[in-house]
Amino acid sequence: MKITRQALYEALWSTPRKELASVWAIDPNTITHASKEQNIPLPKPGHWTLVSMGKSPSQPALTGAPDEIVTLEEKPRKPRKKSASDNPKAQTEKAQTSEPIAASRSESTQTDQRPAKSISETLPTIRKAYKTYSSPKAARDYKYQHVLPGSAAVIRIAVMPEMVERALLLMDTILREFQKNQWKTQIPSDKDRNKNSVFIDEVEILFTITEHRRQERVKSESRWTTWEYRYHSTGTLRFQFGTWSWMHEIKDNKRKKLEERIPEIIKGILEEVARVKRVEIERKNSERIERLESRLSGLVRKALDYNRQCEEGLNRCVAYYEEALRIRRLVEAMRGMDCPEQHSNKRENWLIWLESKADSIDPTKNQASLDFAVPKELIDQVSVMIESDLETYSPLKELDLNSSIEKAVRWIKLQQGLIYK
Image (tube, rainbow, N blue to C red):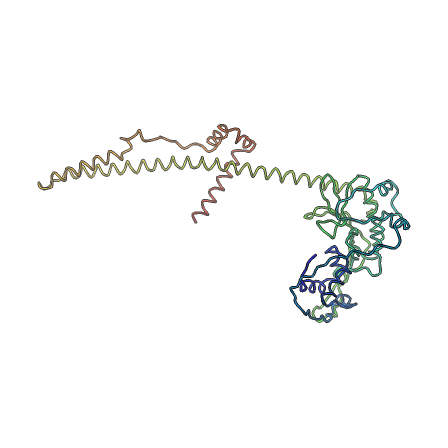
């Protein structure tokens, strides 16, 4: 990962390093090492505690070139002295990758067993998460104070320290259900690093466990704000699931805890998968209809152009006819008036020319040049065009032609109105 010194400096002084490491999916020590190498000042121990109390600790200025690029790259670690074969724990726990993974044989064999009563009975994924979430040094969310994961490849939950064990035991039961159904998981999700993903029939569903927190308003010690808020554990867990744009929730209630609502959770996830599939089918169908209506719009334009040409032809015919009548009335009036003898020949030639011109533009005397085109109903014209080239236009028969043509006409008139404004 590459970042400027200025951007890294601002990130370090606005967000705790463990949170940055979680978001950037790197080790916190990598950030610390790179900052020291680049002489970027780091927040002192206790800095974020003072910030949470509403105080404003001193912040040293950044020196040096702010636009210089810093590479945040994890260096390869030295091999362990103790081999994996001598360490049963290392054999059991496997590194979690960002790729979706299926249930392993060692884990899936335990799927049908009773729910785990202690962390030692849980899946390796859960035991790994418990170590980081239950650590006394675990970072806390700056605003809501829930525990944050200590590394990138840890299952995501958002609960207070008091609820870590229960939340992970519940997550263990849910993961076993996923394994039983042979659903792949991604921990954490690439779409949302604060959640996890489960893949069902090529549909990705985000999921996590959060806690309903109690908010307490207290007098602020900061001179900048009057009140500040503190959050406390309530013991009420919520299982949240859905897509990035729509999340559902199943939570503890007075009658049942989440541990008793596992079938509801699985049913809810399957219903969400069905909804996503249905929405996707509707979206694709809608896009297909739009493409067909766009093609239909071209035929409607041709039909409108034909009717417009008929109207324009009629208007020209009437205009020429009226012009011919005006010329003939002029000739008739001129012949009814006396003319000086010296202009008689010239005058007569001019009147003959006028009569000839009137005859040349009079449509009643030139009917062979007329096409006698009559405007037609748009639906009739479009239907004829479709039938005349079924190889090209047969898909348009799927449309409701009447409503689709009306829609196309409104859109064309709107476009024409915008053009002529």
